[in-house]
Every structure is written in C-alpha cells, then in structure tokens.
Length: 341
Ligand code: SAM
Ligand code: DTB
Ligand code: SF4
Image 1 (tube, helix red, strand yellow):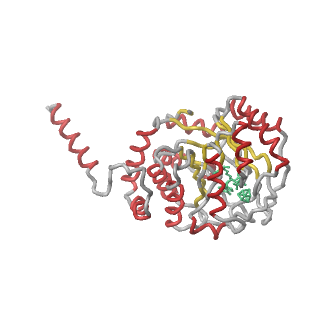
Image 2: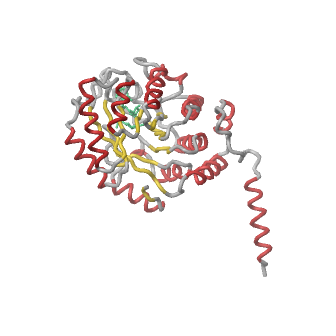
Image 3: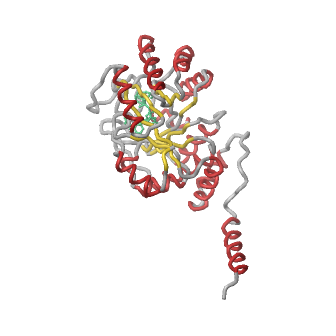
C-alpha cells in the first residue's frame, strides 16, 4: 500500500523539479528599475511553458485568476483621417472603400452605450479617426462623456493628439481613460507612420497623465515587425513611469488597400508569448486581447488568458472591422469558467 508520506514526498520532489528549472527566475523584477533589452530578450527566449508558468504566477499574485474586464468600442467619427498609419483603413491616404462620416450625434452615442452596458461591458470606448480634435467638437465630446458616465459605465476616448487644455476638459467631464497607442517599437515607428513621430505620441501620453486620466496604451503585432521590435514595444510600454493602466495588444486586422494589408499573421504561440511577456513586465496593468480576436481560435484565446490577458473588446464590431459575436464569446468564457468583471 502506498503511504500518505510517500505521496507527499513524491509531490514535493515533482514540485522541486518543476520550480528548480534553471531557466526560470522566480525573483520578482525590481519595479523601480527599467527593463533592459537583455532582460526582455531573455524572456523572449525562455521555453514556452516556463514563460507561461511565470506569467500565470504573476497574474495570480495581482488579479483574480478567472475574471475578464469587458470594454466596448464605438466609432464616433469614421474615416477621412489626415494621418498615414500603414495599418489603418481610416486614413485618407489609402483607398480602402471605407465611407467617411462626420461626428455622430450625442443621442446615438448614448443609445449605443446603453446597449453595450446591457451586453455586459463595463467600459465604453469612443474612437475618432482624427489627427487631433477640433475646438468646435469639444462640447459634444464632453457631453458624450458626461452622459455615458451617468449610465454607470467607465468612459474611454481615443481622438489622436491632445493639447493640455483639451485633456483637462475631457478629464473634467469625467473621462476615466484615454487611449493613445504607441503601436510599435520607437526604432520601427517610421516604417509604419510618417505623418507624426514616436515623440509626438509620448508627448500626448504625458499630457494625458498630467491631466489625471488613466492611460490606455498598447500596440499592434503582425505588421511585419521583427521580434526585436516586439521587445522594443513592450520595453517602451513597461518603462513608462508608471506603466499604462490598460495595455491593448492588437493583432493586425489586415485591410486591403492599406500598405500593410498583405502582412503575414503572427503565429498563435508567438502571440501568446507576447501576452505572457507583457503580463510579466507590467504585473499590475490590464492586458487586453484586442483587435484580431475574430480570426483567433478558441484555443489561442484560451492560451492568451492563461498567459495573463484579462480584458477584451466585446461587441460585434471593433471600430470598423468584425469582432466575435456575443454568443461565441459567451460560449468561450463559459467553457473556460471565465467571469466578466
Ligand atoms: N485616431 C486615433 C489614434 O490613432 O490614436 C484613434 C483611433 S485609431 C483607429 C486607434 C488604434 O486602433 C490605433 O492606434 C491602432 O493601434 C488600432 N488599429 C487601427 N487599425 C487597426 C488594424 N487594422 N488592426 C489592428 N489595430 C488597429
Ligand atoms: C486599441 O488598441 N484597439 C482598438 C481601440 N484601441 C481603439 C481599435 C482596434 C481597431 C481595429 C480596426 C477597426 O476595427 O477599425
Ligand atoms: Fe488616423 Fe488613428 Fe487611423 Fe492613424 S490609426 S490613420 S491616426 S484613425
């Protein structure tokens, strides 16, 4: 008969072997220090299971393990944008057949926000295809924020570059988050966008911080970037002081007619690796599995949740492209025992 002590000692020895793997460093990264390229590249070269174990451990130290935060997007001004972001179907520089609109009425926005809330979203994100907002639009934008907030939703906007005064107006109206992505590594930025610089992006992010709003800032992979660029993107995000509260990781949705429209997709394991590294480097941030979920299998998404993703965009459209249907997401969350936060 096998004795209890034998079982316990066998469990201990398995645990010891598991945790003693030389490639896994369980010492938490000293958060006061900046991540160096060597440290980040070491994470990229860890065996996948070691990386996942470490990410999941850090995830559980900082968040409830089986919950996901749900945000819903609405495009409040579509197309005709002056910028030339190589991934974007809303740029006026490329012919993608997208119809441009003017700023949506406040009532329409409130209607969409009510539906988002009824569907389970806790945050409503309003996005505009602008280089920056015009002064004449500020009144409507502030009304949208106040009315959406009154519904009991968190509010987020993404409108391009902001002046100090605009950021203050948005914050005073109740804007909880401002989304402004850096998209790729500083070294790779000029390959993707030439109508603004990486520093322009950082400048607006500082303005947002100074106004007291939470920062939502992330990037896109699958744009033909090198692995070093993915490391550079995560370094730039994690070395912000403090790191963004919300980090959307987008898988490029390739759109015909854009310069990056025929990019190769990132392998699902490499995508999950990036999520795991983001979780390790930014232990307290919400890491959002963002654009590209429509093309992802349930298994890839499950791997990403295991790697530490704890937020998604819900609703059948992102800004202009497709996102999984509600029933599909519900079935996936149900299967995984994931509860919306
Ligand atoms: N114009 C504002 C700006 O650029 O900050 C706000 C809207 S813009 C569409 C918001 C973000 O959506 C971009 O920064 C980019 O990260 C993401 N995005 C745009 N097109 C995408 C695509 N085809 N695939 C994945 N992400 C995309
Ligand atoms: C973010 O990082 N991803 C969202 C949100 N922030 C604004 C936008 C994704 C857009 C995908 C392409 C589209 O639907 O137009
Ligand atoms: Fe304009 Fe934003 Fe699209 Fe760039 S990503 S073209 S700034 S809408």
